[in-house]
Length: 186
Image 1 (cartoon, rainbow, N blue to C red):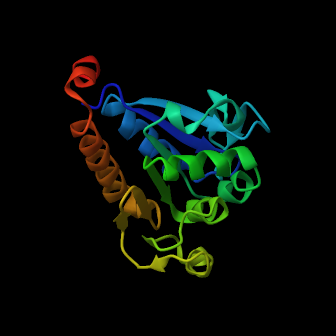
Image 2 (cartoon, rainbow, N blue to C red):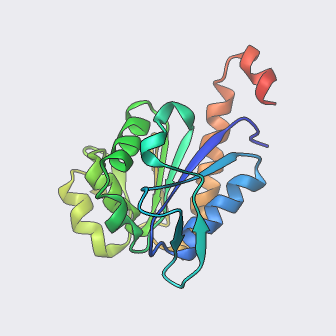
């Protein structure tokens, strides 16, 4: 169990259903406190297939110190997410602080706009492969790629591997927590 760990899951209209809900429920299953973070354009966002998610807060009301991981789902939502400085700032600060930044599919476009891909190895849906490469990343075509604190995947079929890698990364962070704090989070 990962009780005491905190995750931000980004949301905007036209998110890919599985790419938001699968990681959200998988993290909850592990005991991670999850927060759905929107851009502020709405309190409820609809997926590509019309499924609604209600946000807990907005990106302008949170900061990287509040979370251990940020998950960026794909679909067409990243095209909206990347337009908000509060979103790209959150993702950038998470990266700079060495916290886990995880994106799947088109979510990589938010990483491009946050300016965190230079010198990293990453994957994404092929539609944004050139963008990821032009942002300075080495693109590889694998179901999941982990480069330090960056975890990326390509498509919904990759979600089992994506979530396994996220859970592994969160467990590794837990091992580095001082003994005094570990007692509080166990």
